Image 1 (cartoon, rainbow, N blue to C red):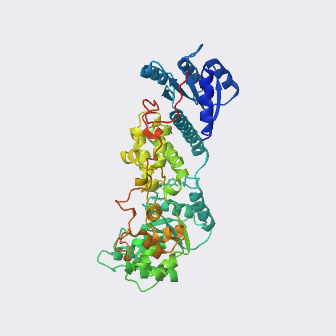
Image 2 (cartoon, protein in one colour):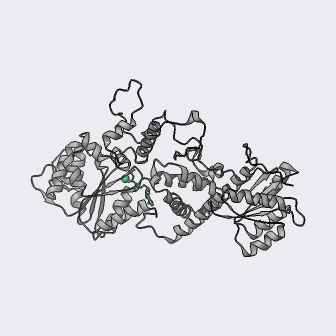
Image 3 (cartoon, rainbow, N blue to C red):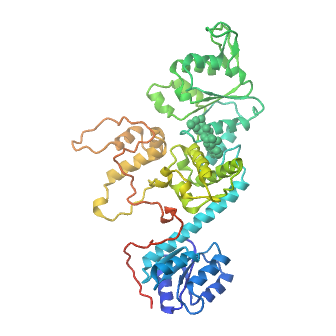
Length: 506
Ligand SMILES: Nc1ncnc2c1ncn2[C@@H]1O[C@H](COP(=O)(O)OP(=O)(O)OP(=O)(O)O)[C@@H](O)[C@H]1O
Ligand SMILES: [Mg+2]
């Protein structure tokens, strides 16, 4: 981990021993013999973490912490407490120490505390950077984000905005498909014409047909006068057919004809009317699977899928989570006139670790709630929903060394396949593509091992959370970093595990 550490101890041997042991663990460390030397050094050199003894000739470690807090608020002090135990520790934390380590110092415990301090600093800097970035970077037509995944989507929107090609926007629920459809319209030469959105899942087939294509007077009981459908009302603008995957099958055949002929026939009428609007569609279903399973017409699929714009799930644009959180925070705080400005480091860590099954919409709701609950000028862990606070990250981390907990390669493969499938919202075609295998092999790799060793049929589940409840995440430890406990960084009682590498300072 990057960062500079300065050890302050008036006992030369201890200072050098600690410096060398931390250096061996990859840290960039220097040492000095007094608090005054530390302050002198800080005038010319940037230091991230100061590790200081308490009792020293001249200025004590506690007094040094007070000075550091005033002069270098971004620097994190760690105090080595000897006699006085808990009382000294509390005094140190009150004086501004980030953490404390009890003597005799266990080098591993110190290394963990230093690593944690550096991670805390880097998160703090990231949050600060994003706060400025969110102020500066105007999101493209309301689409905030700078991750490669969302940039690719935006690039695609830009490239096809000028054309009249039919577009299919795909992505999990809440990823921003409607936002993309609007951006596509607003960037196109059609921007001064209407943008008409229709939710194809919300209506039964006959009603949808009359909404889309219009009807003539007397076409049905309530049709007192004829009415143009939305295809025509959209004029030279854009008609956005949302949730196209849910369109009743009898409507699909009619829509196919309309798209081929670029004319609509109002319900009850004999004449077809031409329309000019560009057609943009969206779905959160895996249409290729829907086609295979005969719930969606293949010919219509090819007709609407002239240009496909996939919108990535939030979990695959991890770099955007804090940026979006900050973006929503600012918007909501301005709207509600609350003085909330930022997000605490531990809260930011939790936001980044959470999986966001409801994607951007869920994050937006989470920030709305957080701003409402927030009593300080920054969002803290307590302002986040319990599921975000309690979430155990499922990143693949194997930290166990106990042979009994290790798994076979087969099991590892099965869990990885499930994880990839989970990451793409259960879309088997997409998962197979990422894994570089065909769908049949994907099914095979998902099968639980069977002791009778007979090949079995593919599993029937097709949902958004394909990880079976019986299979734990691969992580054998909680990868949430220690700072994510969120209850201020007082570090009380932190270094409790057994640590080798003990040093007895003099
Ligand atoms: N990149 C983004 N920047 C800012 N706001 C976003 C972004 N993506 C999504 N949102 C916001 O998240 C919410 C959900 O977006 P939207 O309705 O476009 O998602 P969707 O994919 O159409 O969802 P669904 O599948 O549930 O219809 C909206 O309030 C939208 O403004
Ligand atoms: Mg939508």
